[in-house]
Amino acid sequence: MIVFNGGLTIEQVRKFEKEEPVIYDRVPYQKAHASRKNTFDYVPRELYSAPIEEFKKYIAEDVYKQQYVFLARYLKTAMEFCNNSKKKNYIMVCDITEEILNKYIGVGNYDDYRIEYRLPRRFIDLNKIIDFLYYEPCDEMQIAEFRKKYSDYMTIPTREDEEAKRLMLKKNLTFNGERSW
Image (tube, rainbow, N blue to C red; front, side):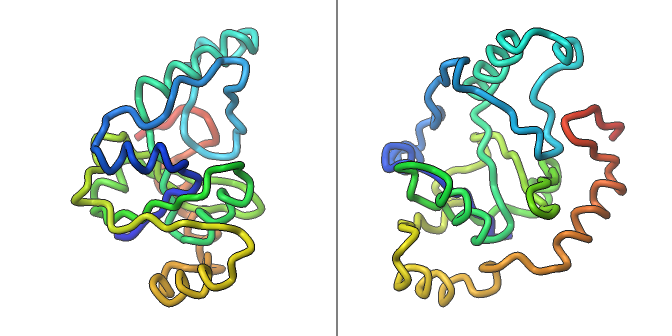
């Protein structure tokens, strides 16, 4: 299944190309945060009421150690992430089997509900990477090229919202909470 990661820097693209295991630099805990807009767990239960400084330290360390790569089903989602990022203009296109993706599935709640994946870095090697797309928000020619190449994956269909809600019920996903599966 084709999936997209938006918001990579040129340095991170080179790390993927060299198959380096560590893609993301250690995040200073003051800058780490969890927006609580998806169903992936970021902190263990015992830290739910901890001071924010402890929470942030855990987030930064977890992101650094695990090297999770967030993947979206649709290119539009990846482009939206690039629009909100500074100097992170690359989109990675991967072909990952649905069986692996379903083990790391979650739901994001932004303006609507979206299915997304948080895959450990070890699952993404050069054999799985199809392309790196350079994205510049104002470049209409680039977007036209993306539409041509990935027309089936470009925009988020209206059924995605309902599909994501069904997934939450089926797998008993909760936003940043415990799962029973």
